[in-house]
Length: 116
Length: 111
Image (cartoon, rainbow over all chains, first blue to last red):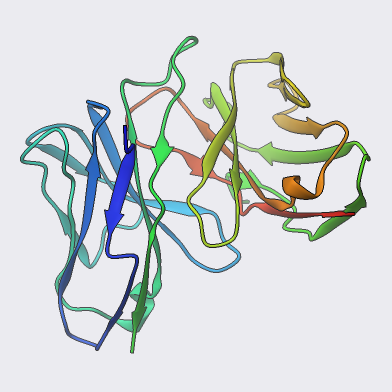
């Protein structure tokens, strides 16, 4: 299993440009998540999905959009890039909700985004 | 008051020492507690997962949760230079709405 894969690894955007960050998992996980991590900070949840066709906002959704057409893929869209979106973006997935027996949330390697 | 407080460090200790990393939290609804290890320019890697209060041991690592004090800890025995990384605590109420993270503690193990 490749686990959670993300592309691209690094991208520089100009203000106002748009882009899609790709995330794919091959573990047949139902739940997928997008987080951002700013320097010296913990991760903050942007959006999450509990299954194909179902998405919901997290703590910091403004400026982003997501879709979930398949179980494997959960792309994150930036429509009008702003300097405040300079960050490292992590995708994560889990098979089920947290439980006494089930570990949760495995992360991809991240996409570093710089908006100038 | 932030939901999860974690000292960012850096914490520098000699090789072989016992390391203690801690987080406090304010939301009593948290039930699931995790420690992630993150090497520079890499994604977080799940290290320990604990449900409710109690201890869990895995090799050189021990996770403790004290829900009455809203305090969680990670102990690393016989620390190695390869343990040098940022350690993130994370927690969840049991729902699908993601994890709440601390800022992470930067740990340096000196050879």
